Length: 94
Image (cartoon, rainbow, N blue to C red; front, side, top):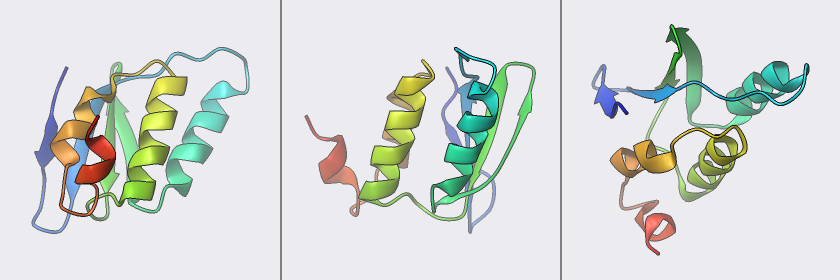
């Protein structure tokens, strides 16, 4: 599993193993949902890895959406730990 890697001073790119789709419309639903999360700027990929560009550090609400999306599509949520900030750290605590 790859970590979140800084790409510029203004943004970050989260690299995560791609999703598992369960129905024909799932791929569209996945990308539609992902792109509605306010901190997400863009998404691309190489092979099975998704490169999710972020506009800013995720808020607590963004983290809830990101984790729900990753869990729904059987993607590792451990990558979210690298996105911890003072704004969302409480959400990540058990």
